[in-house]
Amino acid sequence: MQTLGLMPWLVGLPALGALVLVAGGRRLDRWGHWLGVAASAGAFVVGLVVLVDMLARPAADRVGTASLGTWLDVGTLQVDAGLRADPLSMTFVVLVTFVGSLIHVYSVAYMAHDADRRRFFGYLNLFVAAMLLLVLADGYLLLFVGWEGVGLASFLLIGFWDRRRGNAVAGKKAFVMNRVGDMGLVVAMMLLLAQLGSLSYADVLPRAGELGTGVATAVGLMLLLAACGKSAQVPLQAWLGDAMAGPTPVSALIHAATMVTAGVYLLVRSAPILEAAPAAQLVVAVVGVVTLLFGAVVGCAKDDIKKALAASTMSQIGYMMLAAGLGPAGYAFAIFHLVTHGFFKAGLFLGAGSVMHAMGDEVDMRRFGGLARLLPVTAGTMALGWLAIIGVPPFSGFWSKDLIVEAAFTGEGWRPWVFGGAALLGAGITAFYMSRLMFMTFGGRRRWAETGPEAQHPHEAPALMRWPMVVLAVGSVALGGLLAVGGAFTAWLEPVVGPADHHEPVLPVPLLIALTLVLVVVGVVLAFRTYAAAPVPVVAPASTALVRAARRDLYQDAVNETAVMVPGQVLTRTLVYADRAGVDSGFLAIASAVRRSGDALRRLQNGYVRSYAATTLGGLLGLAVVVWALAGWA
Image (cartoon, rainbow, N blue to C red; front, side, top):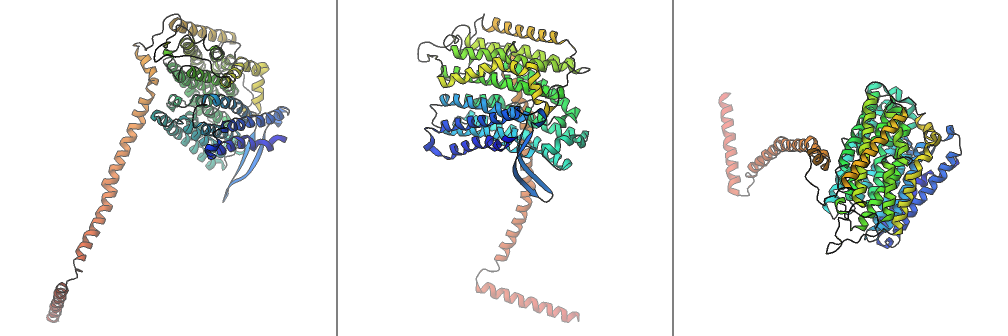
């Protein structure tokens, strides 16, 4: 491809923007945010040029690599670094740069009064650059650099307001839990290097069948562990809700275009390895099913508008993981839903930020209500995102999620009924908790003070915040249908993930669509009766054990503390005690013996003449005794 020479600029522009903004200091405060916007938008323009060139070529000619030179050359090991342009990587490039640029524009107004806005945009640029490196890397080793880069950027952005202890703790929690997942990627790379002698996609993926079932299963499970960390899937999901402590644009970027999508990308990119390990592929699907229901249940009980959306992301990523675990029947559908989700979830998060902007940073939906008339643009754009995420036709989510539900009902034995049933149940719960969010925020009576010292004066967001929301709302409406026409998107990804295997589901497709829509309607009606037709108390009422558990994230932190943290503390204390009582005591005993012997010898060198004379006399007497004894023996 003629545009391969432009590839380094995709990563280079936002990386350069991050370097300038972070290192430039206060002199850039007045205009640095626009530099951040320009860096991200410039990467989008470059990506668009490469994409247009790729679309003009036959499907078989849509894969190319831009070499960056030799990275490592040690003995027989040589690792070349390069950027790979193919339909999968370019899909992510356009999503990351387009949605990321809209979030940058939104942030100009959202962070207008923050004294560290310039540094914030530097971190945003770093996030975009790291994610682009992750998806463009031509092998696992360079991917790992981007993988760690998004982890660093998320830590910096989640804890951006680190003067608040909760924000700093949330950033550390995300960082530590992701390091657990990262070890999975490290082990997977070690196994691949030991077995195949390379980490390049071009060498590893075509030879995945050579790994053997056992090694392939181990690699697949380690890749899944890495994906669970980045994409907040069970059992490494606990960091996602706390990550809402960061500024709202960060939440939008993490959930829609960067970090949580990285795990799905890794598994789809590694599809040949999963296909060589059916057991690992099954575990991927099971993790997806568990997480999509886990996140949906948690979302039903959250009163914090951002945490409700975070639980929603966990659930929707679960759908994508389920699709990735279904093999060739689901790879393209996982990415399709990822793209549509990127638009409507970014719009929902930016809408939540607009509501917070109007309500003095209040996040408790029980203190909202009746905002539709006061925030018409915010309410309208979020309504379109709501209809998209619950899967109402013809909005985007309907096209992508329906394909996953259909694929989940394919196969033999128990799988279609378990996977398909979970996907259907998740659709109904999604409709409930997202409708709950909309009705509690924009419907019903006003539950905020209109007079007095705590009075709120809701107002629509400024234009720089409104227009990105409008653009994303347009994508929420039309993108899914456009990509679904004639199977265009699945055909686009075919050079990378292969043709989407079409198997007839165990239930007729029209029946599946009807069942899904019935469950969606039931979810909306239940939410309307509870949170729109009936008064919503400002203070959450006493509830059942399940609701209390959901409000506490189904005790995910308690489980982690019991299963990991407490045993880790016990192990650490035991090792510390053993170190002090065994190793330290042994060395201290030796040191003490040397010290005592030194003290004893030191007494012989006391500086007194009489002591030296007595010692000499004693030596002479001793020598005389020895001579006398020897003479007597002789």
